[in-house]
Amino acid sequence: MNIKELIMGVINQQELLNYYNASVIYEELPSGIRGFVFNHDGVYFIILSKYLSYYKKKKTLLHELAHIELNQLCQSNKDLFAFFIDNYEDEADKYIKEIMKEV
Image (cartoon, rainbow, N blue to C red; front, side):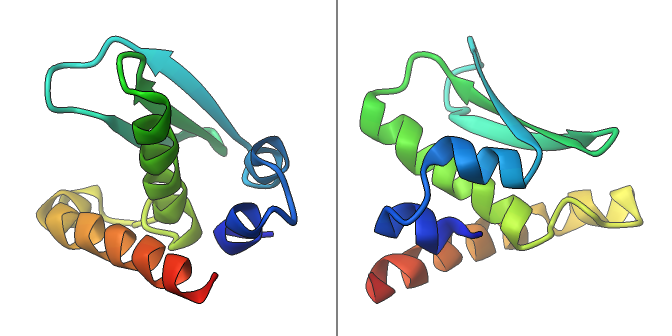
């Protein structure tokens, strides 16, 4: 299961979230923060701003799922993760754009 199958309608959002052992939580986030994802005890928590429009929520969810699919949260050195965060953000955006070109 992957994001491409979600976008193509082969699977639904809940199936992909179950596959990744992930949950989506809508919260009030600081201005400019649409969402983020973290792993705690093997569970991915995707936090999205509750004030986003329907389409921005979907786009942000895909972006956060890309972080999971690209295995970007499993870095052994958390200090290095912080150092490369801009690269990870760009990589997740490019990954989603490539998938969208394919479908």
